Length: 127
Length: 143
Image (cartoon, rainbow over all chains, first blue to last red):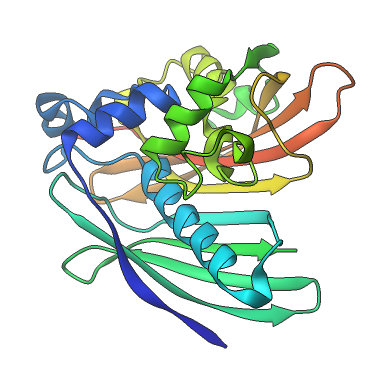
């Protein structure tokens, strides 16, 4: 088992969410409009799950490229679970571990906020 | 299986066509902090693996047919199987199917877990580049 140290990936801002909405085409208003988010019973605007998932996979790519044993390998499968909501102002850090398996490598990553709550978990197959 | 949306299970969206030009690819890579976002030559789905999230028009079409409002939708899980690399300017097409709906009772009312499956194909030869599975949650009484 090889541990990946926790790395701060982003502080979530409304500006970042609006940019992600434009880039991805996901214009669900709960990710951009405070009033709509609150009317839906949320504490405030929440981040797109796929934005946090993208940060997790970007961290995975960094690890793959910086680790000699992993260089040249690619993500062949990913499974992300959204465990908790991420709000504007949250600080998202990503850590994890990887190990060799029969088919190649398996990375288990998790994104936590500044309250140490896990918001996203992801399992990646790298071959 | 939830009776309420049972009739929609198995429904497929129309085929949507798309072609992500380099500038749009670069923008997505930059926003999502891909380590390669400044390298045009490395701009492909192996370096920007969540780029496939752009192809969600089929999901939106099926949700609209079901009468669901986007603001009542949350994301629960996302899976990708990658078979071929998506590069900028490649013409693709995709179609989404509603695979299942399951109901759970939450503290504020019913939650409907819907699994959508999308095959993203190269338009030229119909080779599947990626298979996408999204689990979305419809909150019936969100407020």
